[in-house]
Image 1 (tube, each protein chain N blue to C red):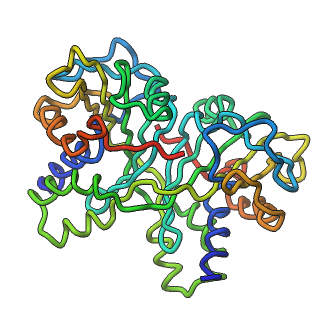
Image 2: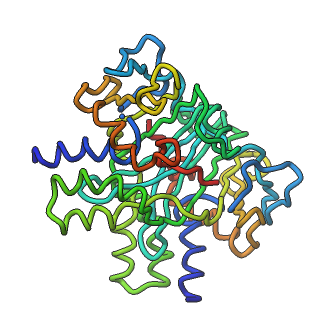
Length: 188
Length: 188
């Protein structure tokens, strides 16, 4: 169990940026995350969608990346590096089976697929369950010059994750160096 | 192949509402979808995120539900039925494997999991690929009184789907009658 728990934290970082089960909107007076001093950005839950992804077992989550206006403009204009003021949020939820959802899919599936394929389809269909954490990447080319211009933060249920977690963020984003350390691409 | 193609259409409807590989923003002069006369809503791609989901093989998609301001307020206030003016968009993309993404996850995974579990994790990790279609539910309790107050539409690459597709929408949403015919729940 301990191994899996640690693993979940590592993957939370690997798959995106920084992480919270946050309230609907962040508030400016929220506690700052360690190292980069990033606070939960106000209103981030209303930001536009960049794209979605999911991570396999044993993580089993579904994730969405949201961006503030500066971020969305940069993506759509194909602008790299991302300009100062860019903030990218990575939300993630545990994948859960939804009986409501499966009841809606089943009649269509049963008309067209043999039983074992219906089962496979429903077993692989999920909705978003409880949130896991929320991560942020904040661009400030002066303040965060030593880490590619990016500050990182993770919030678990609204509380900043510890220094040990945040320390690993930048190293993990190195494979995306050619895309200004950002893994996610915009999907229309 | 034909069976799978038809199946994909059915599931597109089953999992959400109505369906487009749409341009970044809809335009008021877009062609109206059959039956309910719904047009691609302007700016829907910038709407806030309600939640995410995915559908298993052979559909293999990742989907996001977005809502206009009226929708998001209704969700957050727990307001049912949804008020007139509510528009819910269901976007969906083919699940694709991303080598960039897997290269980021792999080092963490290999430190903590045996090889066959690393493989399982990466095989089950996806990003959003090409869009499949976009579906909409539009609330107008007078205009659409005979279908629970909802008009439905689906767009494939910006073009309205045919009447045969749209005819099935309302019946498919019957299992969600207690939630005003809407399957998706808001996830913070």
